[in-house]
Length: 392
Image: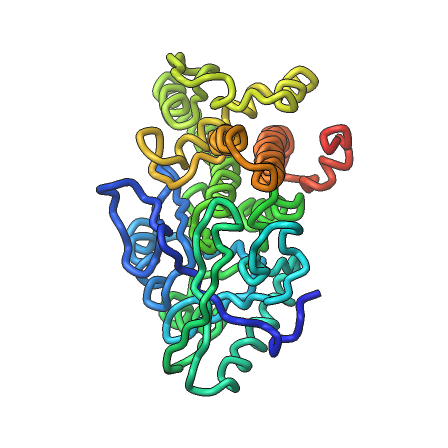
């Protein structure tokens, strides 16, 4: 349970090095790491400034303005308030979730609130608390670091308070201008694989929409959680596109339709020959993944589909994103091999969590491919209950 708002401190969302877009990639002021997944109506960003919301919506409305809905999905478990037009998170200076045994100020760890209504209520309480504290707004600056110890030094800063706004107030103001905007909160843990309920929330949001219905995902920096959600959304979008192309059979010549499906939905190594230049670890051939492939024949195609989408959501040259959420595992392993004992303990947990996330994405793709064509009569959680061996 989160502590009372009166005990919380404010910390900036922005940090040095938050911009991970490739050199020369287009940037959007007030929206760190804003980008589109090539070929999909799926966008990702870090937490924007107040003005950044509308700047992100401009290209979405320009391309997808005729769609019935535009979803904006906040993936954050941690409460966010806007002070002087910029986003801040509420942090607990005595956070019990802070890493034990590491020399790190607990304020550097996010609160983890799984219930979106509870998170919104705390945002409202904290916004009121900031107002109560007077004109001298005190806050900490987030410091990016691979290892929590690199965020150990925190100096309290201050600036004159000009205004405090909540996310819901911002959404309401935008909906007055863009009524089709649908803000949704799907709280994901920053350090761990999404929960099964998170996958179901994405399916529930998209299953009755068109393949061209746009979604903007955001987390703090628009990196890890956002990329994961983009891949999940793309799995649903590919199912929808398959359906829409199949409805064209008999209208469009079969050879043209088959060529279009191969171009849009073809899987490297399955439908399309590729000359792979990456090693087995970079391609996610971890022991638990090899066991999954051996036990479930459907996992091979599911893995190929997930790998294609992960690469598309990754940095250039393969994609337009900011992180490869498969190859980051081996990057952490390389750091682990040359690290001190306490850092190794932290990195080991991170590696295992990221392998679990990759595993779950493949299983989610299996679910989409099996259950999706039937209209999703079964939730992902029910699918996992039925195939409980996948959880071990």
